[in-house]
Image 1: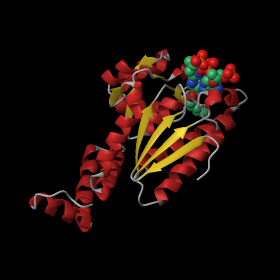
Image 2 (image 1 turned 90 degrees about the vertical axis):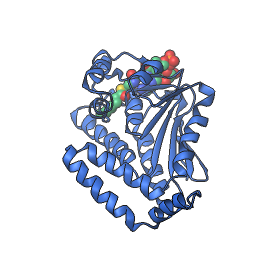
Image 3 (image 1 turned 135 degrees about the vertical axis):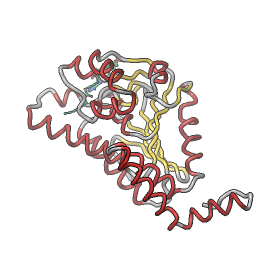
Length: 256
Ligand code: CO8
């Protein structure tokens, strides 16, 4: 896989994608978004891949959508570009791969929206997060108005969106916007440790748990319970489940 703006590195079942457009602090233009979409789709085809770690080159994770490109937009172009970003991020959210955002620096606007679409967020203490769109006369357009309130609640999400202020990672950690906060030098090690732990668990089970969680978030709790019950039944059709249960009873590690 060769990409202009992505550096891809696979180690066993874990793939790290580094978003690399440093001249614009990794800002998302159409080419970069489409590369990301095709990269994830490609990784999904390889059954040995389990976890993807997304990070950025230099001092930014991603500093947002490309502001220069948006300057000339009218309704049609904005509507279409918003749709491209939404599809790419929704594919990430719904991928059968687990996707971890390792936030190494600025995660602003579309950059934070990308992190929100990931399953787990680990942040370096020197990162800065925010949705600065209203300060530019925009609104979040890659899912931020929907995913942020679902993750941290509407009140806190409104404060972040309406003020457009950047928040520190201490604050982001306190409100549950990031799962872990680490020294810059420990960022990728921590993300890899989480990824490695996930890789030791049942792959079918993790995949089904991810699916039931996102499908459940889209529906009522009662409907979510039915989804869970069905998935719980289905999982017994997979030999992985028998191995996991047998391993426990035989006091050994499962061989997934
Ligand atoms: N787009 C394009 N270029 C950017 C962006 C961006 N989002 N962010 C930084 N750059 C460029 C700068 O223009 C600069 O380029 P140059 O060297 O040619 O002047 C280069 O990257 C380095 O940036 P700075 O010199 O500004 O670096 P600083 O360290 O001084 O500042 C900041 C870093 C604070 C991150 C600053 O660059 C900044 O504020 N960037 C913009 C952040 C922002 O507002 N992001 C939100 C953008 S809007 C958005 O994401 C909407 C998403 C939904 C879209 C829906 C579409 C329909």
